[in-house]
Structure formats: C-alpha cells, structure tokens
Image (cartoon, rainbow, N blue to C red; front, side, top):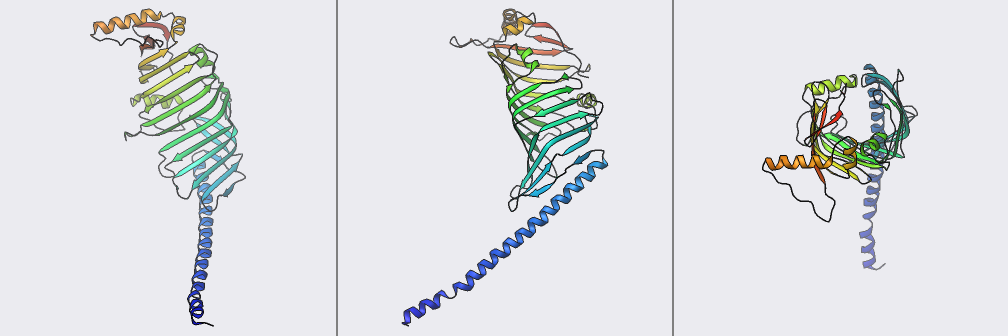
Amino acid sequence: MPRNETQSVGKRRPLRPLLAGLVGLGVFACLAGGIAWHVAEQAAANALDALIVSEQAHGRVWSCPKRRISGFPFALELNCREPSFSGLISGKPMVARMQALHARVHVLYPHEVTAKIEAPFALRSEDGRTDLSFSWSSMQFVIGGVPEDVSQIAFRGEGLATQGLAEGFGDLVMQAGRLNGMIGKSASGQDRSYDFRIAAQDVASPWLMMALGSQQPGEIKADGTVTEVSFDPSERPAESLEHWRAKDGRIDFGNLALSQGDTQVSARGTLKLDATHRLQGRLDTESLGIEPILRSHGINPSFATAGLLLSSLLGGKTQAAATPSAPAALHLPVRLEGGAVIIGPVQTPIRLPALY
C-alpha cells in the first residue's frame, strides 16, 4: 500500500471511538431525559393528589377521573375526562361538572399553565336556585405565576352560550361569538388591585337589546382597574360586596364601550358603592345614535346638550365644533348619586336599586 494511503487510513481511525462516544452520550441523554420526565410525571400526579386532599380539608371536593399524564419530552400534559367540583361558590354549596379538562406546562415555561375546557359546563346550587348551562366551541385559559403566586389569567373563547337560572338575576340567556380578556395584578404595584381587559363580539342578550334598543348583535369592551379585591369562596356575594365597599373599593374604567347597530356609547370614569349599596360615581360619555334611547326615558337630547353647553359657557369653557362631514357625537357626563341617574344637567326618572 502506498505511504499516503496508509497515512490517510491512520487519520480516519481515531474518528470511530469519537463517534461511538457521541452516540453513547446521546443514548445516555435520552435515558436521563426519560427518567427525569418520568420523575416529573410522578411528581405532578402526587402534587395533584395532594391538592385534591388539601381542598377536601376545606370542604371543596375536586374529582379528576380517567386521568392521563403525557407530553414527553417537551411538556407535562394532564387530561381529565368528566371532572367535577363540589363546594362553596359565593357562599353557597354548588356542584360543577364539565366534559373534559386539558392542562399543559411546557418545560421552558414552568410557571405558566395553559388549560382547555371542553363543553358543556354545568353549575347547579344545592337548593336549585342557580342552575346554569354553558357551552362553547373552544375555551382556553393561560395562567401565569403558578404555583406560588398567580399573577395573571388570560382567556379566549368562541361560540359561547349561557342559559338557565341564576339566583338574583332570574333567567340568564346570553350568546357571544367571541370572548377574550385578562385579569392580572395591577401594573401600579398596589396591593389588592387588579387590571382587567375584556372584549366580547356578536353579543346577543335581552338586557343589551333593551338598553340600546336594537335587536342586532352587539359588542362590549371594557378595561380598567379594580381596587381592594379579595377572594373568599366561602363568602356570599352580599358579604363580598360589603367588605369591598367598606374598604373603599372602586372600579376605574379606562374605557367602557357598548355598540349595537347604529348606537355607540363609550365612557370613562369611576364607580363605587355608597352607604345604601347603590352604585355611585361619574362617567364621561361620548355617544352616537343615543338620542332615541334618551327620549324613551323622557330626556330631550337637545335640552340636555343645551344645558351642558350653558354650564360650560358660564364656567368659561368652550366646546369644539363637530366635524361637518361626520355625525355629531353627543358628549354628556353621567352621574350616579343616591340612586338617581343624572345625565348632563337633567335628573332622569331612573332609580338604581340596591345591589344587596
């Protein structure tokens, strides 16, 4: 054999043990990963069992039958068929059932859980005064900050429908083509304050149709901050609201918008509860097509606008003229005081009931 060929073979031979070593490392990594994932799977199952036992000690019974844990190698996925819950919700014994629950935690984002719920979802109180059924084509939640400190919950759903009886509200019927939003700890860092954002499209609801005077599906958007929030499922709604009022809790709306057909209303301001348990506060509104609704409540839009303009002039303020090519938006403050609703300078015959 020529000398150069012998040297070439000699140079290639050291690659064989190197390749064998790399293959061995790869096999070892796969085995180690599989063992680690199996340990994590068992830890997740044990944590779920411990949570169920802990909740039972507080009178809340969770059931996760037909359980399956999967997702190797990039995630842990928990799947429950026909899960259920029984315990106190808003201070009343309730039973909740759903078709299926799927929860997923990615190994790269261990503090974020993505959960999908399959409809239908049923909620019924022990006394039968609440008996609701919820359905949707898709529903997903993303929960951040688990398990130590949940900081934000985002949700997204499509094809939603609610029907049944809810105590304190009577028959509850509502549909929405899309729903998305989030609630999380306030960016201000203030304790017990939460920022929120919600948007619902293609909403069909009797109360919305009655409020805006149209049979067409509408849209609802809201964002802002709620202060002095506390969560206690053992409290009844009246108790929770009273504690919130006593702590001077409030809702600060950055924007609250309703639209349906040709009617559009947007508002910003603050609402809270007064000593008689009625809403109080002020919202500065801007609206289009709201005149027929005002007239239905005995309010002359021209009089309300003229009175507001006169108040502005007496106060040394001027209002900008509307753009001639566009419909004039109606700008009116809405004040809630002592159960009365005051639109502009006009006190309406509307009386707000006590919430509890």
